[in-house]
Length: 424
Image (cartoon, rainbow, N blue to C red; front, top):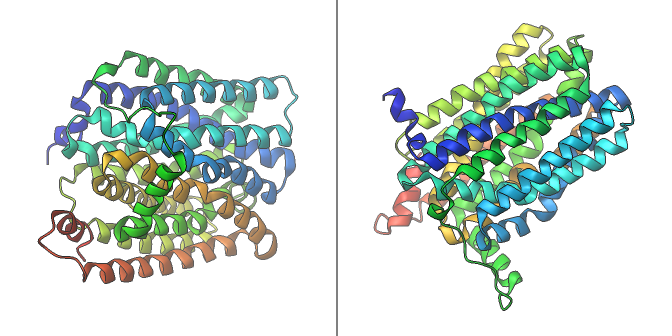
């Protein structure tokens, strides 16, 4: 396949604007993400506090994403994103001002992390559904989702490296300021789009029963086995597979005896692997075998987490984390592609809100559990346990989808598509 075919979704002007504007913003987001973890650990010297900070940043997604999904199906998605990006910029400026003036406390970081999580609860479902509206050709949707992952993980590679250098050179406040300024790029990109071309959900009416619409989305996820299976797997993976990410600042400082730059290398190495995984998915033109991709990637991910937990050599750990990053993206992005391929557009925002809850909304439990277990059994044993559980989860996933495939027919187009996706 040609390189241009791998980038085929970029032929659409609206998606192209969103891709590059969002790319600049995501670099800033990763700079802030790494800086927040380092700042909390510097102020508290506690892996438990790191877990609390991570939990508070994603708890609002668990609490509010279902409402964010409803809004994404009923309100102009363009306006939602313009609003959420503006508020996220204000949050970053607030963090920067508090840090640069020397008034920052752990409590401030906790509160502002919760605020950003609340913003993301409405941003994520709208963003996921918005991509469908701006891609143009539906057959380019898997490519666009994979390119988005390439973007996120390219930023994950660049952002932590910038953060590691800047934290050591000028302090955390400048990192937060860079993130605040980076939001201007995505806001400008949104404003430059030809918005009349963008199809959005129906407008909310006074007579509409919101709870009925929420229940409709829940019923779809509950009764449609392929989507239900993937969402439950993503939730399991997010809780136990992300232990290593929460505890990364502790690994950088205590296991590898490093500093902020060490943390940047560790986080960035996962970004290299993630980019490779995203390019692989972007190059695929067919949906066949995506179930096998998730299963195999889950096994590799779990094994590599166990190896990382035992590793004492920094550069070997970096190499292992490259594979971890690739396996992580293959699972998360493939799950996104499967759901977006199967779900009807009128339910897309609500269903993607369940995906957001599964991936990010469950992270408070994972972050808190990581902090708690690290105090009782140590950070390395905690990550090893996460790897073992990921292997078990991947095996259960395969058994589950093999089971529901037996009951599907080749005559129904939707069921035939499901069989192609999960074909073992």
